[in-house]
Image 1 (cartoon, rainbow, N blue to C red):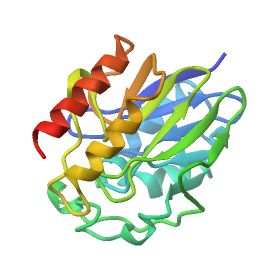
Image 2: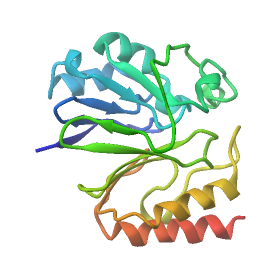
Image 3: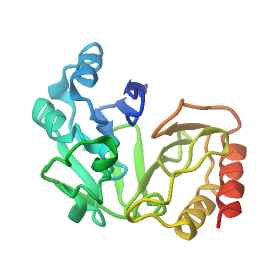
Image 4: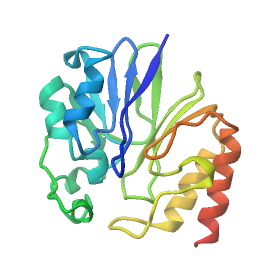
Length: 213
């Protein structure tokens, strides 16, 4: 049975999820490696993690990527549209956190339609630009699970589009795609995990996004 654990996500940090399947992976890296690694070690040997998948390059999701990559030996995956933003203080919005964007090696680029086979789960890569140019969501159709990054959040909330690479029209189009998915559990990039009428919550996000066009 696949397990998902939130292993980071305090304060303004992005949520980091550890998926325990045949090939364990992390979804996002957050900004603070030390507490994330402590939480991981309570569940699994970090060296068993095979991949770190970033939903986008913003600092609150990628700042700890170099340290987590070094500690786990995992391969790092990022949208092909955001590789050029690695190490860029503006594109990664690291400046908003008073920090400099770290440099890290991307081992594999991701694009629409790719599938990450981690065992029981087959995570479908969806390009969902809007919050950033190369934002991604991961969808597992059989488990009806969505890792939504900063595209949509619970209770009709949406990702910001007023930063570098953001686009409200693109975000609306991305959320429209998400409304067509059969989702029972959403693991967002911020806020809490939700399994409460998720489709309706995504539809609320769409209405909100359209209202700010």
